[in-house]
Image (cartoon, rainbow, N blue to C red; front, top):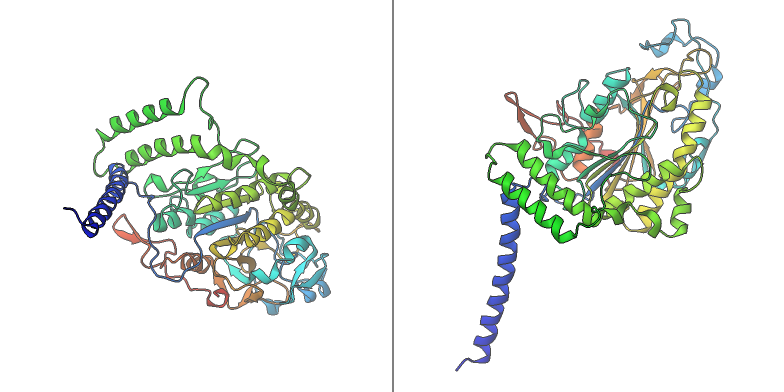
Length: 467
């Protein structure tokens, strides 16, 4: 006779076997395509950030007009730069250029009392969640090289971006959406082009998915007329089997193509809902500024970034600025006209993103990064503009294990050079990786006989902003 104890024991073992079979099948499916996007554990415990949203202000926003007030610069307006501040090399500023004061008004916000200009009054409402880094610097003063350095840590193309490195280190939390997404500005491409976002020498599966501007970020998401989901599934399965029959062990490009077919099918089943903002309450659309000028476009993309985070997307880049010159934050001719226009497009959506993430309990696990490839010069260019400036500028971080409500580092009294706790781009990269639970020395990939990493030479952790 089968006793109660034996019956329960045998039943539970059977249930466990079923679960094991299901898990083994999933592992077999992953192994069949050698899925490198499977979630991976971080290098160390305790990291809070699981995803990153980079608010990329392309063209170089002025630190002087935004988050780094310089009263002395206003006092010296129209004068030559005192020699005590040292020298600086520019692209277009003439040798006899005069210092240009700032017309923006700064005020203290939040419990922290950090000064922010009136260009970002709504973002300033979130300042207690933001760590402002006022002492950033880079090597290059031209757009393309500086954009490469910002995104990849190198000043030439061909190296993986920080988004690709992040996915390489942690994999993806979603199997139905891309792990790494770039949302370009609708006004056009940037000087460094797509190579600054790409996977470089990392396997092709770590490349970004470039969304299209406008209401249709990804084409052909809907199934063709007359084709059922089951029929599409059979087609994809057949393609996968044919591809796997010719898959060589070392063929990463082919494996990436197989993964792309599978992801494309899953996006047809799940992604349309993610891209459809009509299910958002009107209060959320109003919070971001969707449906009104001049915020509508950047608002839609910031809201999309939040929705992608909810679905497990690891890294998103939301670009402000595109096309030639003045359509970016590239204020050579008139700093006032340019920055008033550009800030009006992004201030409300950026503030809404921070508030929305926080009220949904997502800010703690989402690192938000803001900045461009450099700042702007204290000297005037052509009377009212500012030139590129790489010697000292501002970036900020929020969420994802960042201690907000503080300003780290400083430039000198006219905003020329980072003089207090200067942080290079590689230090920013090191800190991003750390907040994701990744060690810069462990996150390496063999290339041309050496183990490459994002930070090239070792970066310094910006310890002061880590909670």
